[in-house]
Image 1 (tube, helix red, strand yellow):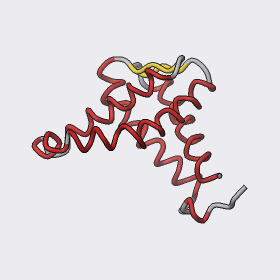
Image 2 (image 1 turned 45 degrees about the horizontal axis):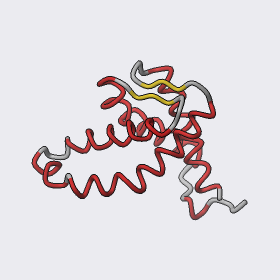
Image 3 (image 1 turned 90 degrees about the horizontal axis):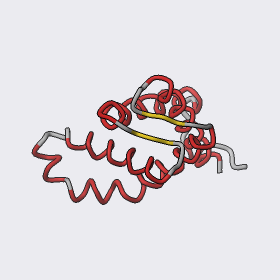
Length: 123
């Protein structure tokens, strides 16, 4: 259970920091941040693989740069489902997913200290 909840908490915390750092991402409440983290997880798990598969030729031609647009679209799509979470402008659309990935990975590394989800204790 902790292997599912902890990444969502890390993403929610990262989103709150991005709200403070980036002008293109706005989060109204902590609840909106948690709901946005869950929404991002669902969109990245369900919608993103389909979009990546359909856009594979374009990603190949652009040497992977098109995947930045796919990530931005997925972040924007998540914001469409969560009231109080807004992604707007070029900064939010392109820099937001990169910064979110960096922060989530960094916090996850330091919080999990090299443990894999399989090695986390069950609650």
